[in-house]
Amino acid sequence: MAKGRILSGIQPTGNLHLGNYLGAIRNWVGMQKDYECFFCIVDLHAITADFINPADLTRATREVAAGYIASGIDPAHPALFVQSHVPAHAELAWVLNCVARLGWLNRMTQFKDKAGKNRENASAGLYVYPNLMAADILVYKATHVPVGEDQKQHIELARDIAQKFNHDYGTELFVQPEPVIQGPGTRVMSLRDGAKKMSKSDPSDFSRINMIDSADAIAQKLKKATTDPNALPESVEGLEGRPEAGNLLNIYAALTDRKLPEVVAETAGWGWGQFKTRLTETAVGVLGPINAEMARLMADPAELDRILAKGAEKARGVANPVLAEVYKTVGFLPST
Ligand code: AMP
Ligand code: TRP
Image (tube, rainbow, N blue to C red; front, side):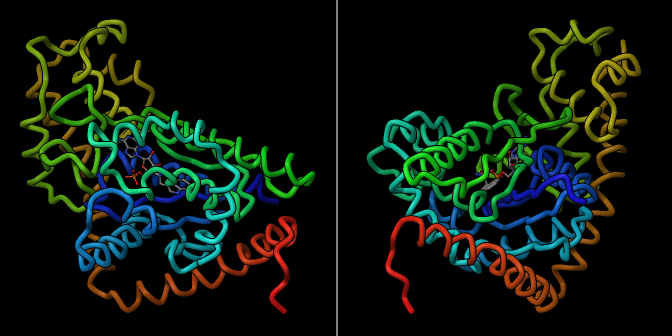
């Protein structure tokens, strides 16, 4: 008996990176045995920010699918699919646009970060992005949403939307989803600046390790990663005020599946050269087999497309009846 139902997704913008792997995908792999899992590639979300070249979007969509499978996501469990292949997400999002309040959306920190100083020029899609994300989750009645730390506020909004809909219509239709944010990899920072999140949109490729990076690229990026003049600390408290050291040690802990104090004890007093060599070997050991498998999968796009088509069919089988229930609850006249 499954402990609940999971939904999560990643945007096909740019390359998948170590933050996506440690903060999200790796945790999903571990949850598959206990939960019924729906994993999507959120292409509708991907067009909310900067203009993306259409061919790049298509390629990135297949790449995220390959990244999921290569990391150990079982495509038949019960569904790995592309968001735009299941129209119920966008249809429910419209209804939720009418439930969410402007005041709620105005509090979203991701919108503020992404819109930057020129808010007037941000797309309307970027503003209502969290409503679409709520629809992704609620249309499956997902009970758990495993994500990195940055998505917590969006899941809280999804809970508020579910509650208001249920309250307004006097129903128990929507399930309140719980965020699942676990492990030392929930907030992987940039390799150049320990105060910034590792992200697909950072203009510097040296700020992140991509899941498709070769062993040489990983070695080069870690060699150049920003550090400080001190040796590695003797205790976790010694990381105070040393964000870059904290980030690299957290990455090492996450990659080796250990707690921070354990890796701090192992590396106490090491110089950066010695630590970076160890971290490179570890990162290559974890990512090497995944990126070889991604390359193999990407070489056969027709097979990937078949897997995704099958996933979408299964996802529609779950999402469409929930959307129908919502339409009925709202009072939309049945079409037949
Ligand atoms: P995105 O790349 O924004 O589509 O994010 C997809 C998933 O990866 C979400 O669950 C994020 O929380 C997670 N994620 C993205 N960047 C990081 C990061 N730097 N550290 C940890 N998790 C991350
Ligand atoms: N907003 C998420 C991000 O940028 C991606 C996302 C879209 C998502 N829909 C989702 C994550 C539903 C979890 C559940 O990382």
